[in-house]
Amino acid sequence: MKKRILVTGGTGFIGSHTTVELQEAGYDVVIVDNLSNSSADVVDGIEAITGQRPAFEKVDCTDYAALEAVFKKYAPIEGIIHFAASKAVGESVLQPLKYYYNNTVSTINLLRLMPENGVKAFIFSSSCTVYGQPDPENLPVTEEAPRKKAESPYGNTKKIDEDIITDFCHSGAPVSAILLRYFNPIGAHPSALIGEMPNGVPNNLIPYLTQTAIGIRECLSVFGNDYNTPDGSCIRDYIYVVDLAKAHVAAMERLIGGKNQEAVEVFNIGTGHGVSVLELIHTFEKCTGVKLNYKIAGRRAGDIEKVWGNVDKANNIMGWHAVHTLEESLSSAWNWQKKLRERGIM
Ligand code: WQD
Image (cartoon, rainbow, N blue to C red; front, side):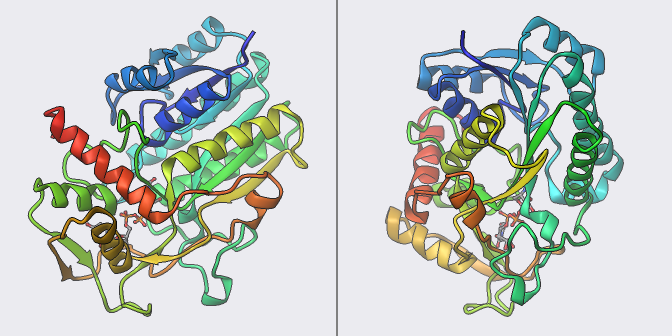
């Protein structure tokens, strides 16, 4: 019988790509999602790619009773990958209680339900945002770098969730966890059947960029070119979403196989390379042949100047590597945007 994995937030951007990779690695997947920031159509896209329709339960992870019913209905569950969270940095500043409630209560509910249902493996979707702005001597940033004061309630919920998970696993609970700290996930599945679907005006760079390239947005604003970087624009570590999805499969296999060395392990998941906003724009233009309309604007509040990951631990201990180039990632994002236009979606 196939091992079953529960994926919360599985109709979201990273969750859907991870569901595809889990199914292709031979796992059975149950998606739990409240559809607050995604559509049930994504389940059709996953099925179109893999030929396997994941089970789908429209449940809010803050609803303990509804979540408990899912655990009972789909027992035995081998492991959980927890993506479900509110994740808009700007919104979190305006609605902190929504973020603190949703992002922590959902995690606590899942952890509470694991021991009594025999679920032992927990993978958490964390973020490089816990590092804040690493000190220059700490770049590329390793997992041992100090976590810094979060720039937003969203970032703070990631730190709080990491602490909740760690303290629970160290309390003697029969649960082991891996915290995956992502850098900047970008791109779309090569089939262009699933991809990033932000609601409304995108906050993140890549969807705003591709929507500008296709004419939905007038002009991309580059938020600042007066930073202490080679071309003045901010530097990030942009990782292809399919490589990131495969990291979750590797992490789950590590826990299920009992290969983890500690009850809680932390891995940076990125490419290990920093790319500036302007470099990314020029790379997009070169690999797609599309001239992008952009302008230099003022800095965005809360942005950090530069961060990219040291990913030696994921490479050497978990045996996972990012294998796609920035060009391939950006081309996949552009193909996805064109497919959305072809299908009349945007
Ligand atoms: C990247 C760079 C912007 C938009 C955030 C969260 C992180 C994760 C990903 C959820 C920055 C610049 C952006 C635009 C721009 N969140 N930019 N014009 O802020 O690095 O990370 O999203 O999973 O936890 O912190 O990502 O894509 O918003 O910005 O110039 O219209 O692009 O200033 O330098 P960010 P981003």
